[in-house]
Length: 157
View (cartoon, rainbow, N blue to C red):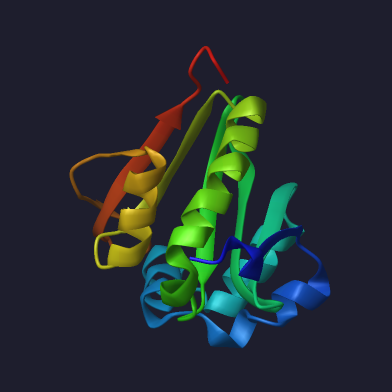
């Protein structure tokens, strides 16, 4: 895998606009199941929230948007939406996102959110990064099965 093809950028409106209409079907289903939002709405809300937001580009094309917002004192809520191009860049993206997760844990001692059980690519990404996934529970607007996932800061972070 050529890691020089991937770059992680602090999100800008231009970068997120470059991927809003190309989000993977599974991520779109998750946005709808969780809050009845289209992916473009979820991305814009994530970008506009107080928190941090990044865009991964693959060959200079915006491909993945991800970020973290504070859901409670000391608790960060990480999120990610990707285009279908993530399958091409997946190993490079996982490696690049390890540093970002470490930065998130430097800011928040606990990272926690939910992932739709149908979203297999996101579930693999979370497991590879070291998040613990709980058994599915009904969650979101439509009470569909989601895994709650979390990661706690270790003393060495």
